[in-house]
Amino acid sequence: MDGELSADELEAILGDDGLRIVDIRNPSAFDRGHIPDSENIPFNELPQEVEQLAGADRVVTVCPHGQASQQAARLVASYEGIGDDARVDSLQCGIEGWPGDLERSTDDEGPETDAPF
Image (cartoon, rainbow, N blue to C red; front, top):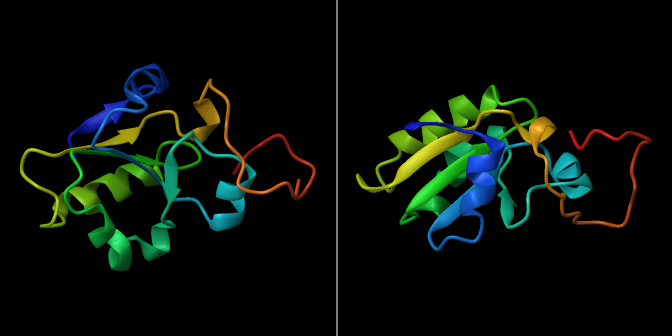
């Protein structure tokens, strides 16, 4: 793991080629709201699915509060398919601190809550 990014730093690189944003929350939380262009690989599936990230130039892991994503970033960084030049970071504030709009994967509102996690 290379470090942690602030929400502003991540927002500044959204859309960059080679950037992969990996949201490690469960699929229903991801569907309720996620950072644009992110993909959902739940934390418990990450060891089996990390190979999907092979060849990425930069990976940023995202969780609810910025804690579990640090573990996820370490796991991704240890995968041999991630090149030596690739950067792997965790979103410091988690989805809770994301200031921008969230995309939704479904029209189903789910439980009454403002929290996307």
